Image (cartoon, rainbow, N blue to C red; front, side):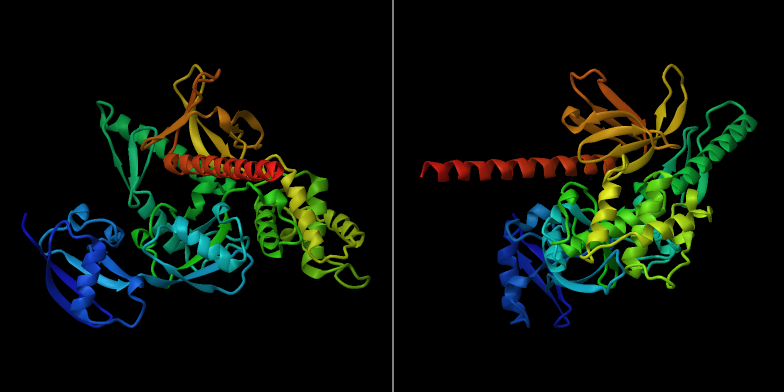
Length: 462
């Protein structure tokens, strides 16, 4: 077996050398050979590694120490960069606080980085949080991540190369290309026009419902470099899995504040339908949280647009009800109203549910209609896209497996009555990741509970 002749770059020392290696050389040994050739570096030698350079940034990869060079299909003339694996990551929270700079090992997948990130933020249950990149619409329409709308749209175009239409057309890079399905061009043009009109209606409905599609989650299975996340990009820390959030109380002010922000934004943006009375109670609590206890002669006027969901925001008569409710609120602990706000939200049927707008087939008809597919810690559900009423619910323990293809997502319930449920969507992979994430958390909690029970039994025996 011949030797590999590779180009080794080290930007830290502005050096580029040609070196030879055996294909079966471990990456760890290759790093030592490079280090001997280049001389001592400024940092800890263990913080350095080999980085495979490709023209496409998303194809660049950190090489694991325990792998061989031939594992990465290295060929003669390839370029490897010897560099420090420790980099800075800019992370902010939803409460609009200062951006924190955290140093992480970028050779590790994001799932492992979350342990470091959450510990720096004072959060213990890292497996329930994730990072969001790009444009995430805030209540005032501004970008809470420092991104413009154009940048967000570009990220989504990169993430989703094309959007299939039910009539066989694809929207690609802003244009449309049609597949010929009929004999006459006029017929095809007519059908394509109808298809585009329906798709525009779906997009408008999706924008109105604020589904998961508008949140660009970072992929936990990949490294930062594999997702082309640069040193200057700001990411937002956000709760993705609502599992142990009911245990968050005033003794954990960091998580309580983040949970309150997500609950408040969800209510005001219409993610959670609320009754008139509940909307008034939540608005009064928001006033208490933002302004403190009610004082006679001060803060008598409230702006319903910033306190109520859109369906109630124009009802000026509700402002008096909000003030009356606000006047009666008394809390000794400053964090207590946030806890109460979150408890009211947690009692809502749609709380903790991640929604995806999909298309399902009408029973007995060859026609696709829009439908919301929801996922939470207990079940997968079909939800009415207009009222958000739950139409059908399947407990997670009934889900035997799932399959995501380019345009469809299918749930298999095994021997249960329903058998399987299939929808048309481009978000099948993300739906599957969300279901799998909840199942992983459930299994980890059960495993931890089993270990604790065994330790307790052993303690009783002693």
